[in-house]
Amino acid sequence: MGFSQALSGLNAAASSLDVQGNNIANSQTVGFKSSSAQFADVFANSKVGLGTRMSTVLQDFGEGNLESTGRELDLGISGEGFFRFMQNDQVVYSRNGQLSMTADGYLQNAQGARIMGFDANDDGLVLAGGQPEVLQIGTEELEAKATENVSLVANLDSRELAGSAENTVELDTGEISYHFSSNFTAYDSLGNPQNTTVYLEKTGSNEWKATTAVGEINAGGADLSFDNNGQFTGTNPAQFLASLTEVELDNGAADLTMEIDVSDFTQFGNTSRTTDLQQDGYTSGAFVGISIEADGTIMSNFSNEQSVAEGQIAMANFRNPEGLRPEGDNAWSATQASGQELVGAPGTGLLGSIESGAIEASNVDMARELVDMIVTQRAYQANSQTIKTQDEVLQTAINLR
Image (cartoon, rainbow, N blue to C red; front, side, top):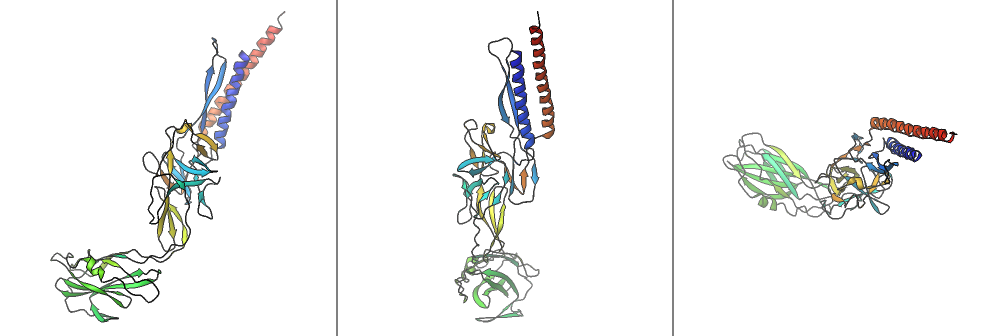
């Protein structure tokens, strides 16, 4: 019986060395999770045990260190959860976020597994929820968008005298005078820039006349008024904007329709100046790359400085991650022991956030593995000594006369 006990000890030590050797071999594998061998003693209705056996190999899903790479498509998870991939028509889970983009817009790892997530609608709104699907990034050119809404914030100098405007400009309807002008670039439906100017002339103590021109086209205007505290109280901005509808252009583009919000205008005794201007139009743009936000939103970036949401990377977690089955290639699959996946957007619930430009290093502790390997080696030597001793005892018994 002593031989079988020692032999089981040798097998156990060899199995433990296999696990430790695999951990050490994967100490530089991105997203790798170390394992440890667990053993149980063997009894068969006897007073003395029959040795040991490997009970299971337990995975340690503790987080590895996040290491910066500076590469936009390298993703690390800060917190719990797994990326969800489609590999060979099977859903697998991984902590390795080293991705690359294929020619047809799929984000996949080195093994060809494609990352999954929630798609965005035509308005660029991500609808997190439902069943995740393989994400595909469109690389076509972004269409031009005509300017529809403009927001102007400006101060008009209350010290100006009504009727004293010395500046003039010639428009298609004739010459107009003004004290102050605010200029910006709008875009038509073909993406052509249209130089637009709002001319402002003081006509009374707290009254101003606004005239908007697209190029040399007089697009109309309105009277603006202010209270004794310099706050805008006059014409409702919507009425002022209504005069800007359907500006006819001669370049083949659709009529330009803009709404200009001037409700934040003020009239103080200070220099007239524009402090903020926002407009929502842009010209067409070529695809230049993607960026990934902390919440997993994938943004397509274009040469016209616009960004559009293409989708959101999905993450999954399990009640018992240690029950996942290793599939190789840094991936695991769900089992009955792991339980059903809990899918959601990064940063929600117990799911971690995504760090772009970083990877999660292996969680193997090399110092601990080397110490454990020495201990296992000593156990192997001790079991070998047990066999040697048993052999000597047996030889002594055989030589008895």
